[in-house]
Length: 624
Image 1: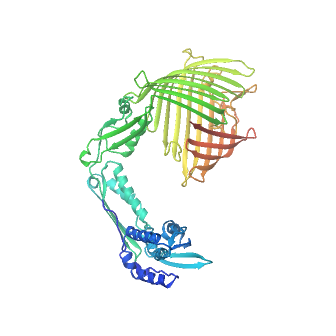
Image 2: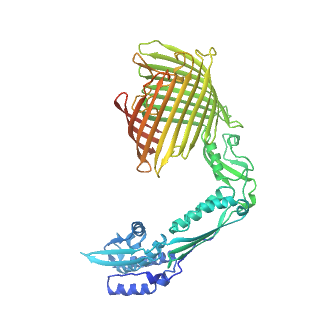
């Protein structure tokens, strides 16, 4: 690989002016430097910097020459002014009080040279620099004025690709040419030139051609015509195919777990995105804390190149505690205990207890490691109690689950027994049960799983129960939810949500477990209303319903990367009879958004149009 060079191809001194108002000795030194500028400007940046540093060292070592600090003013276009203020020696040493007179004169004399070097990286190869040094009230001022001149633009781009990619994959070559980031007529900047070269090499090496390299690059600048000609050549090397996994680092847990969740097939073309998918699949299991995936770049091993997997294991036991708060169910404290090597066979035991002001619950689950189809089988049980809006609900769930998780999709088959105990204030107690086979399917097609800006997340559930198979009332249950993210500009986004649910049965829902029915209202439903406050009203108590429909539209305006604001509109209802007029509950408001280190935090103030009341909505949590 050849490092790119910039060739000016012109006499820079002819258009480079310096004017300095200091003592005659300094004027003499500057005239000498100006006469030698054509030679000095052909010196590379690094040796020039070394000369300046050497002179500075001499000045600092000379006794009796220390002077007070000085002030510097830079007059230049905004972007160039910042570049000069960040890099000019005269600015960097302005606050020093140990600069000798001779060294100060040398620093001033080299300002023009440094300006030339710095502005050339931005595409300005013919700057004119004026420097004035004056003493005002015993304080020295250095005024620097830079006229950048015209900016250099790209006149010609010559990209060449050699090796198998040119013969076997011409469409790929065309894609790389079209993706080149410095087209003809674009302004020339050194950083953009470096980035364009590196990005093209990166893209070529991401798929199939893992050993790709850049064999030649050159940027020739014609400063007289303010034009640059770019050329780069890439050698693809042979196409790589993926071979078997080579796993290291396993001690407690069998390496077969990694092979079972491996989405790759031997012989498939090298693709860096697929390797990252393998990495995420391994990290999605509870066994490994760190995963490194690598493939050799040796062209002689391109066919069936081994995929090296290095892992670091989690300890067998893990204890977690945390606190949180949400306006739905109040302050909370929770504890979780996990054991990842039950029976010495990498079976998992996971348990959690959670105490909230208006909700308490816990669960326990025993799971098997992924099988050869990447499915996990588990036995689970949970208990949940809520007391909200005049209804005390106590729900128990026990069942089995067979689930599989992939890069963007999850699906699960379950068989659960539900038992609920409903105790309304001043009303009749209900004990209901149901045995429910069910299927769930989820898709995550977003650009970022934690802080998405583009794409959608879909959740669906299907289930049924048949009397008298441990069931009080036959029914079918359907539920779906979609969140769609639309990016706006560089930071902002629009979030749209739609949620639908239905329990299909003959008659009312009195004999169906309440945990399978629907409420509306709250932070993730309709803001401006209390949690689960929208449903069937009876004697001051809110009961769950057979049908649910909610929607939301939210615009998020991000002021910084981590902080933003939002305005929203929520609407929906929960009812037992969709065929008759049902009031729609509207909620509008605004809020604050924070991308915290532990996930998104939302603080909203919603106005419930139906209730004519403002209600805050806060969700946050910290684990420790």
